[in-house]
Image (cartoon, rainbow, N blue to C red; front, side):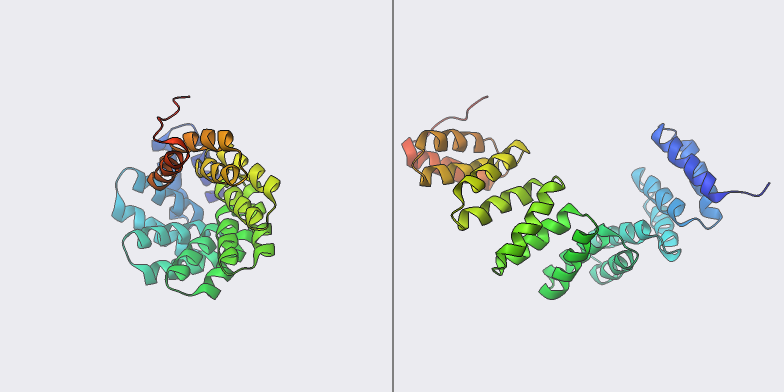
Length: 251
């Protein structure tokens, strides 16, 4: 009976889900030895997880050479972390060409950092089209920054639908700038409910502008608990302006 690399790969996935690392590694190695791209990628990630960096990288390179999108993407992440940005960009491009949403998104980030706004936008659009929440959010942020707010709003809504609270927050900002106060307030409240306390900060500012000072004070108190130091600092300054220093609400 001939060896079935796809079957070995499926066995490895089940073993890994069952926390059988030794069984998973053995099956990944056998499938990798038979030229299976995804098995090489998963073997590489497993090796990285236990600190075998050189062997892990070689496995990712084998996966990439076999046309595996995840292999190219993870190799790109490794290269970017090492500061090898040209090589990382090339790996992300290969992943993107294979339909990988994360490859398109990370390529967009590199291009944006390099000042290639058109290239970044195109990459974020591809990530967004593949259902990536980060791609939708970054596309929305880029469009909003240059004033394309109708399209930015649509992209922010897609990011929110995919579970990205930053998309919800940006949606609130866009609506507030259009004086759609009720919609903006609802978006800020949703962002806060999703765990983003910058939503509470923006909600407090909106309520203060509307003259709802009690609600604003409560929102700023909640924002004080933010892990983001800037959000907490702005909330503290806002509370000081309202009625002097106040303690954090323990609830």
